Image 1 (cartoon, rainbow, N blue to C red):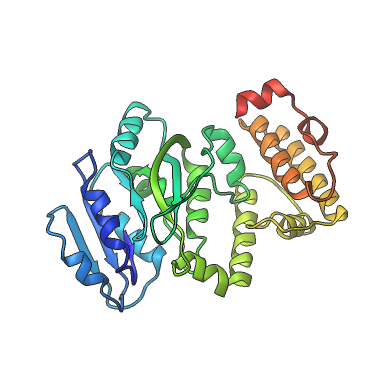
Image 2 (image 1 turned 135 degrees about the vertical axis):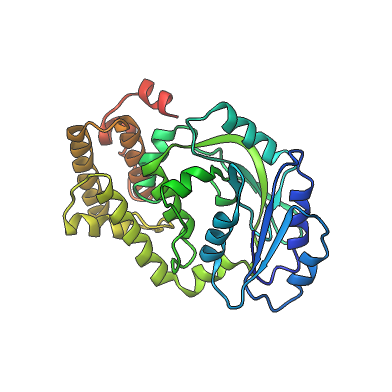
Length: 320
């Protein structure tokens, strides 16, 4: 649990871990030089399972999360931000699932969004359950579930040297799962695992506002690396088309030329995917079609699953 100036909410976050029905856990709380009363709140807890680390200088959330990974000794690692709340059965649900599904390396779930007063905002949509569909979406660094719902095998991230990259302006988690999707199997479950707090002061929101251009540049770099790393060979112009249209937050308006150009790039990716005999070709078709439809919906209504990239309704149902 990385912590920074979290005096208002961190007590509730820590208490939600103490209240877990699965009681075999260790918690690493890593304070990043808070200037408020965060440290006092943390020290008020008297539980030998809580390990408190104080940085001597501000290092950022990616560094602190990586430090927690290195310090951990358990079989599984779960994440929680200092302003979120874990539901009491969260650990039990995920540990039980991973124990019965050893082929899964990373497991995410659903969440409820709450505001700074703990009032309900909305429930997140159901996470993607199909590991191959998640792999397809991760080519473009598309979030499949909230980072703090995730539990993963410690041995998996240690063996494959998967870590959170620093200086990512708040998208370190996207890069982490992009890398994980190439090394292992990621899956989502429908169970609601946490309450995700949305408020003006949270680090991600601040970074998004203050570093929007740098964040967008890193997002495009990660997309390019992911697509190349999966064996697709696209030109610089084709990557520029993806960069302009497949952004982190969908643009309100895309031109007809941009949509048509993206369609051509996606067609080429399908041709290359078939030639490489990738094992997630139907899922790739589905993901590309959905991304294209999201970008085109404000401009025209002619794009359907069948029209864009082929496939049929039976295939679509099996993918979902």
